[in-house]
Structures are given as structure tokens and as C-alpha cells.
Image (cartoon, rainbow, N blue to C red):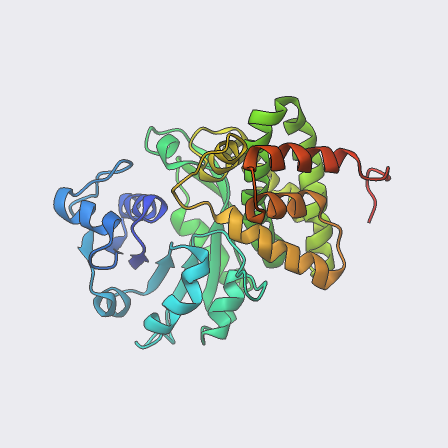
Length: 324
């Protein structure tokens, strides 16, 4: 299969590496002048992978799009809509798009597959690939499980059967809404976990339970299956996000609680705003999400604000554990 991976940051470069090792003809694209692309162009490697010499590395977007049957996108979620304006300048009507990214569009509350549909891509040509796993572990040969989901059952089954290996055990997703919302929301919970690593570590157990429960409420209200919150895309990714030293979102929360700044991308920041919007739109109580949003976007002393917000969570009125 001819595949172009658009985006060559840490996850995009791993996807290119992985798919090339699966025998696919892979092109890895990055924007000219971008730091991640320039490192790969000069050295053929980055901090995570060494590119197989069979991988075509290019900054020519037209070349990358036109040569591929399947296009994998791995960029910042908030840049997807603008990026698709560039991609759809070329003929993409017969191509399959796979989103290897986790987020919700902050301005609209739309899932990323909906952003692609808004950009003119047919829903039956769209799949999402999410779930647990850090590149640093994968490249050491440590296996994990992931999920591919799509509104097109035949497409997701074909992709899973093509991409599965001893390194990644794939599952067929069966709830696109729940898969996308769950995958995005786990980054918000990752920020909360980082804060708790500084403020009160024992609360990470309750965070896993209560975080999954509030995400389940949101998924259900949006028309998805609430059980998806307990699947690979969300709860299954908690170990990777809430406890791993490699998690950008967990590290963002930890440094925030220490009054420091994390300079790398933490998708959960923007996603907390998108989820807050969705909670208000669908009338769903999202106490942890709203706390993360206030911590991320509030003013004043970050450490003090983190302590105050955790205290406010505990001061909420008593509720049934599984309230709707």
C-alpha cells in the first residue's frame, strides 16, 4: 500500500517507521523549515526513530498527497481545519484518510473526523487510529493495544488486518463518537494527573474512576456508547497518560502545579476548552474537565490556583456515584 504520513513530529515519525516496517511504501511529509522535518532531513533520525532508508522524506505536500492511496495525518489537532484547506487543493476524492491524532476542535467542539467531513472528505473514507502506547516503548519492542475506528465497517476492518503486528494488537472500534471523544478527553485527565503528582498523588486512583465516568456521560449525551469511555481509547490509555514520564499532558500539569512552564505541545489544554463547551451544549456535568480548564486558563499564581481548584472539587455537594 502507498501511504503518506503528513506530519513528522514524534508520533508521525513513529507511524512512518511502523508502517514501513509492515511492508508499505511510505512517504513522510513535513513543512519546509519545520524543526522536526529539518532534523530528519539532515540526519535521517530524531530522538525516537531512525527512518528506514526506503521511506521518502519530503516537504512537497503535492507530491505526498498525489502519490498516496492512504493519507495518515498526525499534526496538532487545532491546526487540522486550516491544514485540510491545503490538502484539498489536490485530488483526494478516492483517498482514505486516517487520523492519528487526539483532540477536539476548540472553536466548534467538533470531533476531528467531523472537521475532515467539513473539508469535503466523505465519512466512509475516514478512519481514526488511537489508543495506548508511547513511542519510546514501541521502539524498544514493548507491545501494546490500539484501536482503529470508522463509520465504514469494511474500511476499519481492512486497516486493522493490514496494520496489525506483534508490536501492536489492534481492535475494531465500534463507536466513532466514543472513540474520538474518549481519546481526546484522556489528555485532559493527563493534565489533572500531573497536578495530582504534585498536590496529592493518592487521588490518581479516584481520578481514573471519576474521570472515566464524566467522559462516559458526555459520550452518551452526544449519541455515542458510554461504555466506550472504559475502552482502549480512553481508560485503556490512562496508564500511558496518567503515569508515564513520557506524557506531555501529565508533564504539563506537573509543571503547572510547580509554577513552571512546559514548552512542548499539550493537546489537553485546548481540549479542556472544547470539552467545557460540549458539556454546556449537552447539559453534562464535567467537574474534572472544568477544573482543568480553570487551572489552565486562570490568572495569578499557578501553584495556588491548583491547590484551590482541587479543594473546590472536594467541596462539591455529595452525589450518587453513578449519577447522570
